[in-house]
Length: 356
View 1 (tube, rainbow, N blue to C red):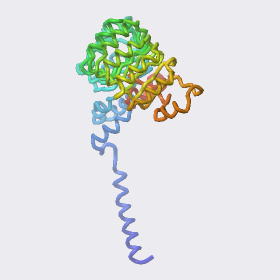
View 2: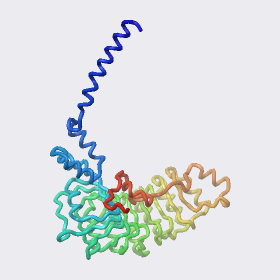
View 3: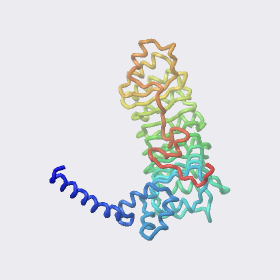
View 4: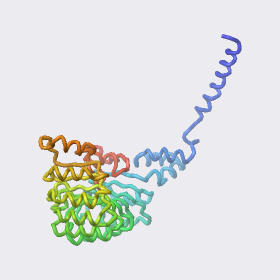
């Protein structure tokens, strides 16, 4: 080794030795508050509580609203006091799917500033005598953008609480709700003009209620799920005229026939991207008409390879047939996914019950 290279090597070793002590001296308390807040956002509620007991500074940081922005409490038993604390700390996205909520005191919420934007109440329940009281109060005090009340009983008070969110509500999941009537569903769709996405799947609405709903849907609507309802061809005609900007439409399990297809192709040709049809609509000529829609990309229908000639296959070749899932308004696309979040919010479930 030359003398010059040896000197360079020794200098580099000295620099490395000088750096090591400084690296060892880097401690958590030396990090800027902004960095600590970002680190704390990866912690769950239990860990935030523990960190808050370390020192005064960490206690303040652990209460930063950024760390409490998204909370997933599905499948847990929680108190109204706990929900108040979550809201007080600035939660914007709250998942309470299949949660049991216990009332504390008089059961009334006392949160002065509620910043909730997304609220998943699907399959949740109140442990008190009035099974809906807490859920109604919570919904009424928000200015929500997305709300799921799937599988809950829709009393007149609950419908009114949903209306309280009308100025901001854009996504509403009513799938499998009980108690929806002609008046209640009409009130919801007429009083919530900002809705762009709604599901009434499996709600057992009577025919006249569906007819009224289809005539009064908000014109801004872009995604609609009518799966497993007694929807007729006339309903399809009315809703496609009322909502010309529909991009996703789920008609699976309905009573429509191939005669409804022309209403779809004529009124939604410039907007529809995803369409799901019931099993009885499998007329090849009508399917070819759908293939001519310029924006249609996904199609779900009763595919029978034996009845599909080569000509039809070529006409439908640009479409994705029966691929993936058509999810409208629902917070989750499949059963286990709610453990990881709701809608587009990634948020792992907090487990207060180790047995689950």
